[in-house]
Image (cartoon, rainbow, N blue to C red; front, side, top):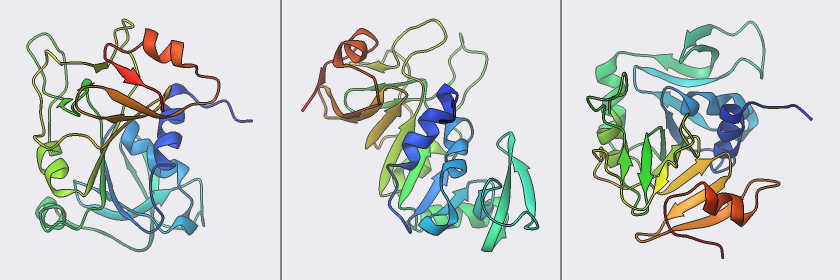
Length: 211
């Protein structure tokens, strides 16, 4: 079995949440790794806000396809894909064609609020196009590591950080599992292999219930 890094595991788990044949926006970071876990036969069309539509992993398919380097990795243009400008890319977003957007965040609270604004204490991070992406897509998935580099939980009851998009997350995917914000708690829809409820509770600063 391939030993995937934490970020790659999260990306692979996020790929499992996507329905075949959907139109999916991915952003920088973990979201940008998701296409590497989606073979062509699933029929998912990936969109990047800077204007690339219909790309896929260079791990699948013919090696003679046009290859692009963005998000810090390489992708190929699938048949029917195109490269356009930023204006055309966001016209697709604003017209409501996105089935799913996959975003990153610093924290997510139990109501689905996504904290992705840079604060004075942070060296990097900004909302970018996430407010529009979240508002336009039918479903919003946040993909992030369950704790930060200091071991602090990223799934919290109430975030003290500025909340970005007004529309809440539909689902949060971490290396520990799949979690649905329910307003006053997270529902652990499914836990990753080998993960127990005690591990989740120890690393989460919010109420969690396990159906």
